[in-house]
Amino acid sequence: MAKISVIIPAYNMASLIGETLDSVLRNETDMDIVVVDDASTDNTCDIVEQYIARHANIRLMRSETNTGPGVARNRALATIDSQYCLFHDADDLLHEGAVDTVLPLMDETNIDVAAFRYSVLRTADGPAGEMPPIDKNIWDSVLGSRDSAMIDLDSTAQFLVTINYPWNKILRTSFIRRTNWRFSTARINEDILPHWAAYMNAGRFLAINTSLTTHRLVPGREQHTSTFDERRLEMFAALKDIEKLFLDNPIFRAKYYPIFIVFKAGLLEWAAKQMRQDLHGLFREYVAHSYQYFTDEDFDSVYRINPSIALASYRMKYSHR
Image (cartoon, rainbow, N blue to C red):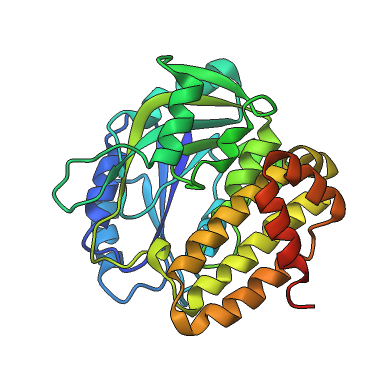
């Protein structure tokens, strides 16, 4: 049994998947590397097969139809038996020794979730820069100059509103099974649910104050983050999944739902500004419907955090009645 599984969903990543696999392989830990090809139309699979011929710890799962990264990750997740799991994107770069750094700390502390800083590559030829300000400010304010720290979510809930990337976290597989942790099946924002579920179910997690992966945001290449046509409306299915998580867990709702509403307001505002003009009316209808679970008690809780968002949420709930 491998120590960790690294799950990599891939769709038309022939130009980058080789570099990504090379980066993952620059770790000494015994790894099970699972590439899930999501019905690519280029030669992504051919390149992965070449790596499989040279590395016995890489395997390829193929999808006959394109289902999106969330479904692809969930498929691979059902097949693993390793102690830990890392979800890595097919266009990102894991730093040398990253896994070797994190796993001994997780073993020592017996923690279920570890998160680490990351870098962002915004041009094809680099160099990589800092995390976006929202994440950098939270990491700087909480960790300071410490190399790592155990984070108690009840006293440091601002980590919930860091960007919901899946690739800067390592999870214990038994924790995944025990909590029924998964990705949304939506093609957009499928990583909101697992981000919030990981932190809330864990309660405490290990934060490592070192950049251990590089996220590539190369101009001119389409990514889900930059999609603002009809596909963006799938974000509401992802939001509904986390609303259900709160409905099913009254303790989570009491502690963290007001923070989620503030996060949701920011996400919707960001999407609305960039949504295609002819979809604005439909987008507003989806927004209004997404507030069906927002109660008067929620209004009071959110008002104590951010009065303007509480009032806007209340208006949204009743805007299409």
